[in-house]
Length: 458
Ligand SMILES: Cc1cc2nc3c(=O)[nH]c(=O)nc-3n(C[C@H](O)[C@H](O)[C@H](O)COP(=O)(O)OP(=O)(O)OC[C@H]3O[C@@H](n4cnc5c(N)ncnc54)[C@H](O)[C@@H]3O)c2cc1C
Image (cartoon, rainbow, N blue to C red):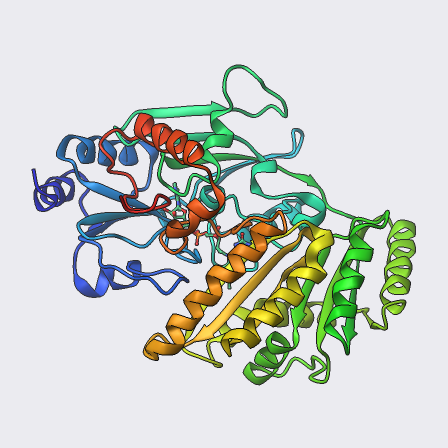
């Protein structure tokens, strides 16, 4: 049966939930990467039973499905290939339960990350994973990408908070993994396998998340540097000290000026780099740690200011979250990578990025979660300028080589999707890739779930 026949049949089964008009489906064709496609249809299910019905029919008819959350992914994971049907989770956005006694939240995949954060805070609870896209991305997308964020340096990433999952397999069967206990070692850890699987193994329909007590106090420090290398040395000094900051974010001069040109936040344009650092905990610990960090930064010629009211804190974080959109005002095409190096190698990596930028004559803006060695490298170019675009792609390979030579990885949190699949062989051995393909084949023998993602084309 063709995709058309699948669509006709599913329209009858789920009236009002299947969309095929161009204007309805257009915005499901892209994400935050520069890739795009056009789905044959978009379905918005409202329950696990409906997702299971859709998958069963897709399995029977060989129809290819692409799960989609907020479409904020950076690597094209939710971008539909030709002849695919998008499953979108706007209709499954309920916070099912917040169990304060057990500190667990049960949610549907379409819940926006920020929404859960707000609901938990009202109950004095805290869900740490905070991608900078938290106002728009969904928890289903976060689980599928194993999303991180600024607070990962102290609190870890999404996988550290997922206790259990309900997943619909590509043939329609419902798989429950993990549960609502903090421990559990019966059999293979299929929950962890699902986390970060980029919508290629199963469709996540329910998530059980661990919450923490809300930290008592947060101190926010801004530290600016006139010399890039001083900032890099300060990062290394902080990460090798006895303090684990709640966030340790980095912006280079190019990112600072892009943000200030985009909107006036009051960031110092004469700086070569800045660090946005937070520490949290009880009052006595926060003031002690903030002082220690300030003194470490000063020893590398950093200038410190403390954001002492909510307005100044929010303004700094808004500036940080504005970098991605702001960069598009520099050049129309952004090759966005999220390399990670062992934290002690940050000074070396930043020097290497400067050298690569000079070698290829390209504008490279870097920012990111320096506290865990995760640098978002943005090569700014214009796809239409063939010569420059070629140089940008050559520079990208140099960046990946340099990252791997330093013991790093080519993606810390954005995943592989479409944009990085041709590079995974630089990092993973043939044996690893072949085992991963076998796993994909067990879950999805007909290759109908999120086709064309993660693995290089044969
Ligand atoms: C401005 C900006 C800042 C960002 N900052 C960060 C950051 O700090 N840290 C970080 O980690 N990421 C960041 N990202 C990337 C992105 O927000 C994350 O990858 C996020 O987890 C994607 O969520 P989403 O709901 O938008 O998913 P989508 O983009 O819709 O989908 C992403 C992947 O998840 C799969 N998927 C979605 N829902 C399901 C489901 N229910 N079942 C199975 N698979 C599913 C899709 O098939 C796709 O492969 C940022 C993006 C932007 C635009």
